[in-house]
Length: 105
Image 1: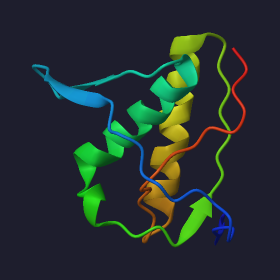
Image 2: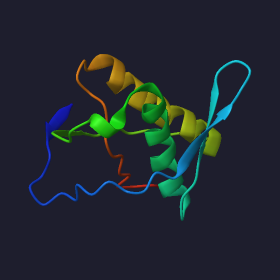
Image 3: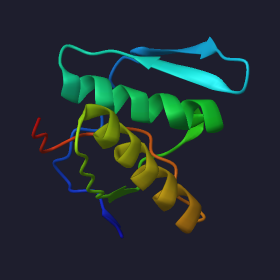
């Protein structure tokens, strides 16, 4: 699952483009970006930012996840669900940066 970060990897942390909105039962994650790919990356980081203090996380390893969906809502659900699975399955996994390398609409 986890592998070492490549020596030439971009470790710069992008600007956070998300906010948390109140909801009667939980929280709403509101994320945006210059395109849908960036918005998905930001909503993933918003989820982890709400659950943990990601500003204190060191980038030591990288993990790959894949998600599919019948529509954008389904894709977003499965994308976040895959990240939650890795978070639950690996005691030491908290992402500091999410980069989508392939995004087919």
